[in-house]
Length: 221
Image (cartoon, rainbow, N blue to C red; front, top):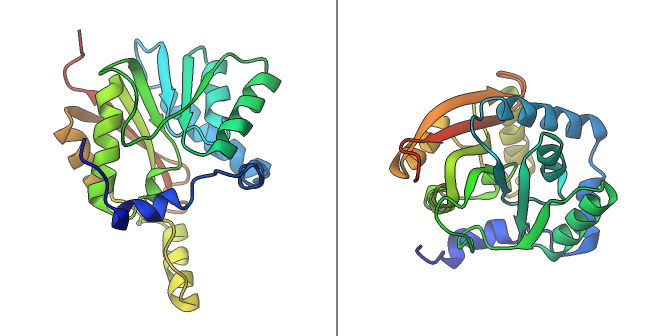
């Protein structure tokens, strides 16, 4: 896989949760926000067929790992941030779960082709500032996914996205969340041999968060 350049990697790597303090702050997010996001993910999981093992990449503080295990999947979670990894391991232990939490770079995942039945990439792609970087990450997720990839993204076609853009323009703040059109994602996945399965919106036209599901065109042996 091509090495990333500093110009397109620094933006998202600067937001990795290396410190325990940063990970703990993320964990204290509003409970309602967490429930709504997990409800969206739960809707996406209903589309999966013949899936046993799931890679959660990146896993952050382990929120999705716990839900995935509750739904009966064998779960591996990966992240680059030491703070996030520590928080995820503590969450797994506290829940009495068995998800495996490992350190890994999404641009160079240490797994074989098709090693997992499905890959989940939740609340990450919007940190990637360029289409080229998004394509590299998606290609790597597709490489290790035997059947499905579920990926969340922020749609530009929503009230939330419009308000965010207006606020950034008014306050002259740098853009830290990057919206992506579904058409772009479909192109990246098609190039990796995956077909579009479904697109689920948290709140159609109101909220920007969507979950797209892609299925491998030809299942690996």
